[in-house]
Length: 254
Image: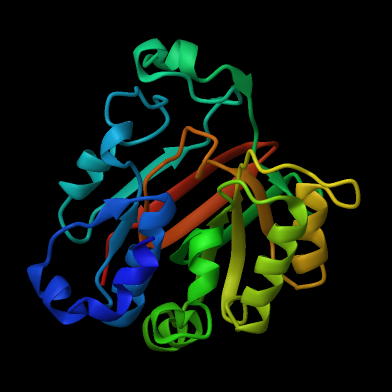
């Protein structure tokens, strides 16, 4: 329910604090406007409960990213495996990467291309929460793009658990709100959200974005089907995909 906090926050004071704000899922509701309203970078990454888990060796921990100096760059590569089973009781959870990520995974493109390279300034979050901000001062991604991303944006989105019809509606609403007008590409995270008899999750993305002249990468390493790599809202990023093996380099520049 972070949306209840938006109109009571002193956003300028948060920006003046010059500290990292890190999280995901409902916390996207706060990360996105802090970046779009003030220009301060925020990090879509671990919540406190995620700290005990080992990350894939291809990733950086959020603490490593947060400790980097301005002007630094860092590369992460796509995870070879993901988690597909539901969370268990905390006492029964495996925390080591060899057991927690049990299913092979690969990045894919919506149009079937095997090789792709895109660059832009990262902005996005959890689809169910950030889509509610479109058309408000707290989710004005088109204005953010005009003022802070002359090189264009890379929009990343991940569904917490909505079914395919819900995903289609939310993506279409973001399109109507101009979120993809300045985009150089779209990164769609994995989801446990169900298909429907009429529509799969991939079909939902295709119906919403398939006729937009943009590269779209599916099964990106972010979201509610771990592991997820830290992504810095406001960072310049270079993303490449070659035969299912992906990489993203983020540049912590103004």
